[in-house]
Length: 195
Image 1 (cartoon, one colour):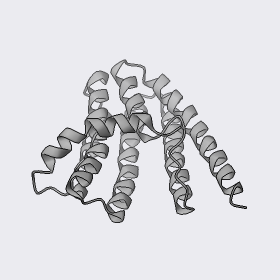
Image 2 (image 1 turned 90 degrees about the vertical axis):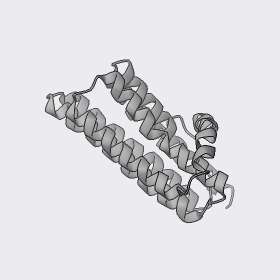
Image 3 (image 1 turned 180 degrees about the horizontal axis):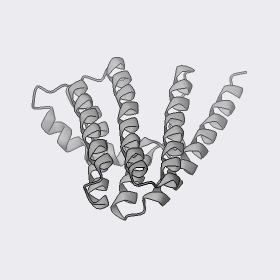
């Protein structure tokens, strides 16, 4: 199963990307702005002085930059291997700061159970991305699975918006590790064909 949510987000980013294409901004600059936006969101989450609904919207808004830099790159003919690499690296930092902000928030309020699930979700998120990167280094496309990055951002934002952060973290924790298993089995099957 590929990433259908990612496909729809890329379609949504097409028009804003066309507007950015008329400026002098580069895809790498948008990628950096996306990281800074995620850092700002993480800061606000850690402080805990915003409503959960607003936090959810901010998570979605910051996550949208992941599609925006790609859209700009395609529309300006600046799709490069380095750009893809740079985007991927900064995406990991963006994921990290958001989870770190959530972790600080729950530790400040003494919600240990929530904090544990934040860490488990973070580990799963990194593992999903790592398995894909490792598979691609072996020449395999590996976008399958129930919980790619787009789905994680949408689910996490939704969990905040409806005030069910615990359940959102629990679902992400379980499904990210299940996605890792899906990808491992996929890679194993694909490599077995080459023997």
